[in-house]
Image 1: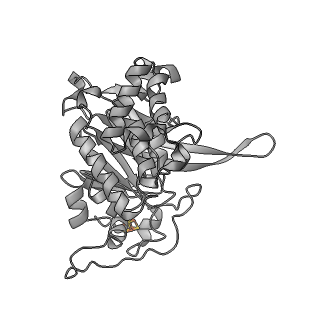
Image 2: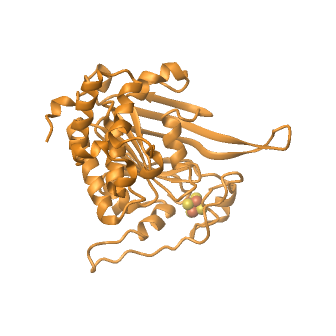
Image 3: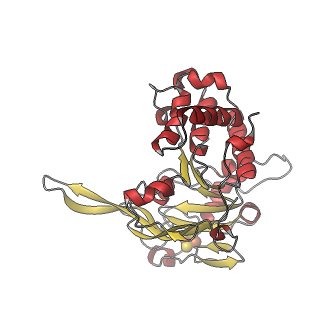
Length: 338
Ligand code: SF4
């Protein structure tokens, strides 16, 4: 193992105190205008993210779960300011970064990094693995060439790759190894927050567990905070402290992991949970099979967005949107029946 001292630990600041969440997102919206015709006139909007709030403390993992198309990846990209939010606010370490310019965001980007779902398409096939990781440092003007090489070697060692592999190209690695390169790249700048956008979804189940364990080890070592995005509750179960369940641009349930798995309150969470296997054959879970797909975020159903698929829907659900309200301590649910 390389001396961990080769990776500098971020200096704690006053804002790192547990009272102030490291990342705080309030009423975040991201709507994409739909342009049609020669004059590119606006003809509607995609309500990809429609007013969500959450926070992540230092050293904590928030799992963000929902089916494909629910807007969870857009949340990740908007929080990172790769997309400009339509409304709402994003605070990092107490600082409002919602409207920072590209130049102002540059130093902030060192504190927030992303790991993508498909490691193959997110790695430049013409660059060696070592150069891919080193590029993060050179773009930010960190260290001399020799210092950067040493740092990259340390990162390769830390994520379970051999130093000799620094000279290999992405196609020479397995899927799991490519994701380790992605993790080394995300770690290069000593970030405080890492957004994992379905980081293990493209990997075999056995490799998923290895990568999740690696992420947990790194979290313990560097006090990292994760926003871990996945479409499957089974994937986020191991790594998350709290979980937010998202449906069609909104959070429908938000609580700590134990409560979510033992006492889910939203019918959508119940349906997602029924697909999670239980290792004990004597325990059976009620099966809820959802009919149909997630409706289009261009024309979300009125009232409760989930009413078109909810087995408990009432007349009121078709008209009145349920607010996200407290069901118990730290447990928020948006359902008329709760
Ligand atoms: Fe189902 Fe109605 Fe609750 Fe929506 S508000 S989840 S439709 S019961």
